[in-house]
Length: 109
Image (cartoon, rainbow, N blue to C red; front, side):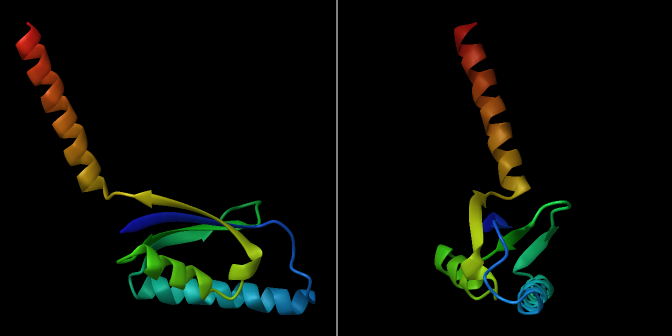
């Protein structure tokens, strides 16, 4: 199952800046490990924002929840999670819709 996940930090958590930066580095380190393991397909920080995005490939909603909750900065982030379908499935759906349109036009014409 593919998910587009955006995490945004509204404000710096109430902790010393050095501790916060360490947690941020640890969070990106975990994301890089997940990328190396194939769970994160792509991702990165958004320029000019305190936010980042990843495309995650997991087996269930529960696995995604566990993955996000285990990130060091998880409790301080606002999450936007959008389910996705792979491009090949989207292509199949578009082709099916075209076939249905052609069939309907044949029947009405």
